[in-house]
Image 1: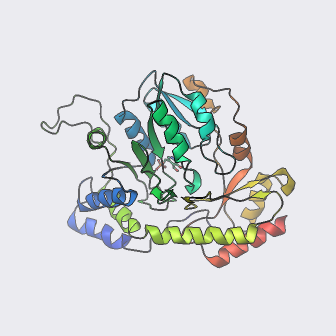
Image 2: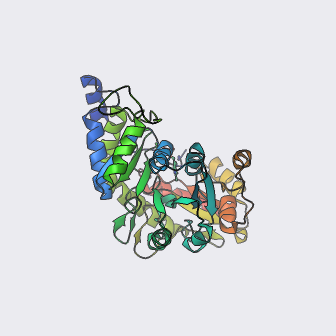
Length: 367
Ligand SMILES: Cc1ncc(COP(=O)(O)O)c(C=O)c1O
């Protein structure tokens, strides 16, 4: 079976984890945490990194650090994972949705401005599948209306927009290090920022909001969102290889492009001018002219040993939102079509040339 995405643990992961075990630094303090936080935030071009136990809580922490709460609105694309939305719901805030662009599958900045109200507290662009959002346009709207930007860069480690790293544009930005991410800790996440005050606030909130001058004394509700030194040890070893992994993912995407271009009814991922798409996942979209529906195609590929995964189901009319009283009956035609017709092919950094050739051959033969 060719898995849709497998971690590649080809560096110092084992050595660093064994070091944690040998030295007893297995909990949420230790040198690997510090090195991983410093290393990853530096990689993004920022001063502070606050490591947490996954990307979902990284988003919650970022929203909480900006005091997002009941009565506030947070604008995000409807084509995203539940984490972006749930983090707003955890705060009692209302998620407000915009459709995505048909080529990048990212938040459409043209539709964004119409969704701004007096209650808007933050805009959350999601860099979908490794292609950065149109940050100039999004920041323009955010500045005009004095609204904070929180980037959901969970899928976009090392992606660049006009030479700057995804994750370096927002007031706060959030990453995931789940096992399918380019840099993984098994499970893990990080909030990155240049803002000293917000960094301090995230650090406090992630650790039960203990007062620094008086332990076990609390003025605020905090969370236990701590990452362990063992997770950070894996993350640091991964970070040492991040550029090599991006080279592999981009090379694999080029090969997919070469082999799959020109197939009627099969839309391939794009890379706009001035960006570096890191192809976290190599997504494709099946149009009616392909002659086979997505589910049937995915099933056939699976029978030939090729695992694939569908795009997200748009969030605006999911039952959970109805329950929360935020169901949105607006029309989001691009997200709707992508949610129905998009899926991704195996995309891990360790994917081999002959595997991609096999996948492309199977896909063409099915048609
Ligand atoms: C866009 C996006 N945001 C947030 C997350 C949440 O990350 P985690 O699974 O580490 O909680 C993910 C996970 O895949 C994601 O894709």
